[in-house]
Every structure is written in C-alpha cells, then in structure tokens.
Length: 301
Image (tube, rainbow, N blue to C red; front, side, top):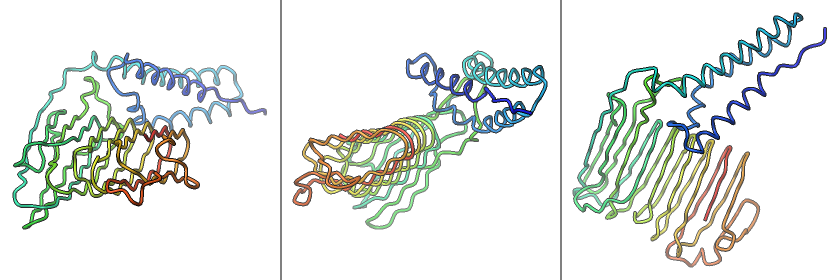
C-alpha cells in the first residue's frame, strides 16, 4: 500500500500566516504570538496527519482531513469571535510605590509571564520604583522586598497563566508600566513570557542587565552614561536593541534562525560574531553586550 501524503501541515502554515498577517495589519485585537499558547493542538494535528496517511479508503482519508480542517477553523473562529462569545471580563488596576530610603545600590528582578511590559525612568526622588499593573481581576503583581542599610533587593512577579489559556470573553492581557529611580546604580534582571516589552534604560544607572525574552516583540534602549554589562537572550520574535549616540560598545551575537542587522558604521565587525566600536576600550560610557537569540529578527543600532 502506498502511503498518502498528508495535507494538514500546508493548511496549518497557511492559516498561521494569515493570522500573523492580520495581526501585523492591526485587524486583530490580540497579538498573533498568542498562537503559541495552542501548542498542544499541534499534537492533535500530528496524530490526525499520521492516521490519515495510513488509511486506504479515500472517503476515510477525506473525512480525517476534513476533521483536521474543522479543528483549525474552530480555533481561528474562537480567537476572532471570542470577544463576542463570552461576557466582559473584569479588569483590575494596582499601583505601588517602593521608597528609596537610604539605599545606595539596588537589585531589581521583574518576572512577567505575558502581556505588555514597559520599564522607564522615575524622576520622583523619594522612590526606588513606582508601578501600575492592569489585568484580569486577581492577577496583580506579587512584590517581595529585602532591604538593608545600603542595598535594596526588589522582586516583582506576575501569577503564571496556563500555557493553553485563551479566555472566551476576549483577551485581557496583563499590562505593567514600571518606573525605576535614576539616582542609584541598578542591577536589573527581567524575564518575560509572551507579549511586547519595552525597556527604556537611557536615563538609568544600570550596571548589569540580564534579559530573558520569551515570545513577541522586545525593544531595549541602553543607558546613555556609565559602563553597562548586558546579556540578552531572545526566544522567538523581534528583538530591537538601541545604543545611544556617544556610547561605545562591544557586541557578541549568537543567532539561530532569522536575520541580523547591525549598524556597522558604528560597530564594525571585529571577528566572527563580534562587533566593536573603535574607541570601546578608552570610552567612559560603554556597553559590553552579549546577545543570544533562537529564532527571529535582531536589529542593533
């Protein structure tokens, strides 16, 4: 018996491409990267594809293919019409302010499971951090703080969502807007899930940055003054790294599948996967950057 070739994978690729296109055109009210929450569906479709390839009857084969198509269209329908199928979901807003006190250096960790995250400068001299959190009821940030005489340690953590979670009442993504002090040196550790992230660190005193980006769009604007060491690990999506004018940089890049665009007029290639400013070693304001990305586009400028 000659095995039939399945057609589910071409259908999956076409449907996924259409959804990403609609998302990029702004015709969807949710981020197309949220599709990755449906990864268990891939197991179902693989099973159907294997089953269909073993069937001799053309009618049974067609029925299996039709079932796979119905499953895919059903998921698309739930995503597109979910906001109309379920009741409106309650949105909760939480605000916090952590005082700076007498600390002279701070270690801040942000663990964000998914949604929109923005981090920027805080010009209020009395506080270390101010934050505004918005999302479904009961999903406010968990705050852990440890302070001694001169050093502060602050951890913000969002409750984890199930990876297969998609609400029928329309998606209500978490949104965090955070502002950090510009008055003391910072060590900043950020872990993100699925969504969009903006780290505007240009006016901050960041000694060390560790960013573990998940899936989606991530933009980082590095500090304009001082010496910063940064490690950026990207999962899947678009990564944009902006280095202010006047800051020299040494950049090591390890990319998987995707594109890499480095401004070589500022950062000439100095070796395999290495880019470096000519004045890096003598500069007062400089960045030591390590970038490791799995799949997606990387822009460094």
